[in-house]
Structures are given as structure tokens and as C-alpha cells.
Amino acid sequence: MASAAAVRTAPRGRIDKRQAILDAAFDVFAEHGYAQALVQEIAERAGVAKPTVYNHFTDKETLFRATLTAAAHAVMDGNIATLDRMRSPGEDLRATMNEVAYQLARSCCDRRSRSLRWLTYAQVARFPDLIEIVQGCTSVRIAEAMADRLARLTLAGRLRPCDPAVAAEQLLALVTGPLETRSRLGTRKLTAAELRALAESAVDTFLRAYAADPR
Image (cartoon, rainbow, N blue to C red; front, side, top):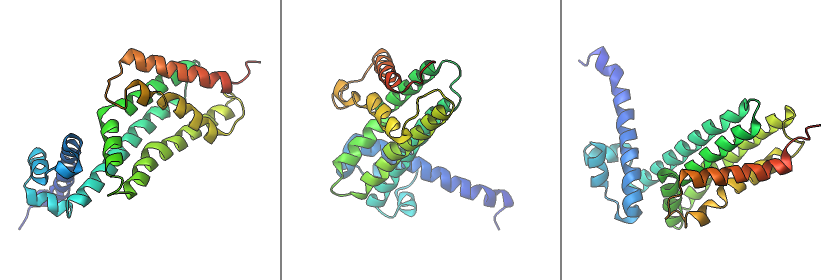
């Protein structure tokens, strides 16, 4: 009969294995693409047997969907945590927004976000449902969170009255819009100085339009 400790740790072990498989799968899919990725290699990197992968995920298609969905939620969670700095921006609103914009730009350019976009676009014909899932997490949900933060700043008198959804869309476009061109579609790594300059330029343009009248 299994001990009480073994019973308690079994669910945790299953969760850990599932996460290890998802992490390994993302790396393998990012390196080789969907078609060339091997479940055996994913199992080896995750430190599990190949049948264990299939116990958690019925087939390669299911694993791919789960992998990209998990990655999209991880990107979303990180960016929303960044946006939370705008809940209490302190006296220097510009400085806080500069830092938030910089962190958003960094996230957009990091390996996980870049690989997530490439994999989604590359497999859009085979997995059209993933566009809605990935965009829902990385675009729609983040824009909603940004709109919420901007609405709070407007109510506090830090920004002029505006439609927060439109303002959020414009600010995010100012931050992320130039990245694809400057990074040559993600093939060139931007320096921290370049990202900071881009972020500060975006915030400056935004505040020129939306900052509250100091009077």
C-alpha cells in the first residue's frame, strides 16, 4: 500500500513532468519547427520516457497546441506583471512609463516571444486556432491590461480624459511597431541602449498627446 507521503507527492510529480515536457517541447519546436521536431528528442530533454509524453499529450499535434498555449500565457503573465508598475507610478510618471515600455520591448524581442510568433505564423494553415489563442494572450489581454492602467491614471488626473482602449492601442503600437523593422524581423538582436531609446521615444510621443495639462 502506498504511503501517505507518496500519495501526496504523486500529483506534484505529474505536474512537474508535464511542465518539463512543455519546456522541452518549446525548445525543440523552436529549434527545428513543427514538422522536423521529434517527440523522442522532446522526451530526452524533459528527462522522461517517450510513452510519458504521450500519457500527458495524446499526440504531437496536441503537444504543439499545449506548448504554444503555455508559452503564450507565460508571455502574458510576464507582461501584465510589468504593467502592474503603472498602478502606483509614483511622482515621476514618465520614468515609470519609460521603464514599463522598455520591459515590454525587451519581452517582445526575447527568445520565447520571438519563437512563439515564428511558430504560430509558420503553422497557421495547420493550426489556425492558435492565432486566436496566441493573439488573445499576447495582444488582446495585454492591451486590456494597459487600458486598465491608463484609465486609472486618467481618473487620478495624471492623463487627460481619453478612451483608454484607444490610448492603450496607440501606446503599444509606439513601443512594438518599430521592433520588427529595427530587428530585421527578429534576426538582429537589439542592444539595451537601442531598446531604451525606442521605449523613451514611444513614451515621449504618447505623453505629448495624453499627458494632463499641468495647470
